[in-house]
Length: 88
Ligand code: FES
Image 1: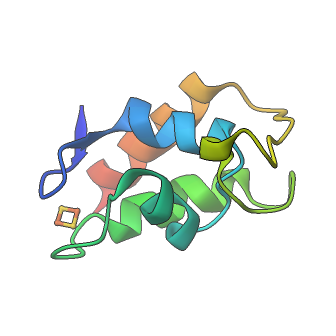
Image 2: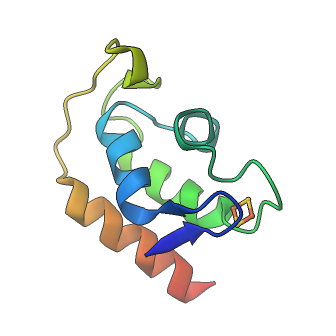
């Protein structure tokens, strides 16, 4: 499901960014581009990032560095993103 229509970023793309270590909206934006245009999706991104916050240092694993260990499967993160979208 698309979370960011402007940049065609899906919930799976965001879950992958979070799996890779993204822990803030800025991290997810840097990794995926989501939230970098109109900003409508930033609340949903923030909910997903908040769910993952505190687990590991922020960052982006695009370059293969700073890969975080996750205690929550990416699918659960995707569900949290969907819940945030539905509640807005
Ligand atoms: S919907 Fe994500 S920046 Fe517009």
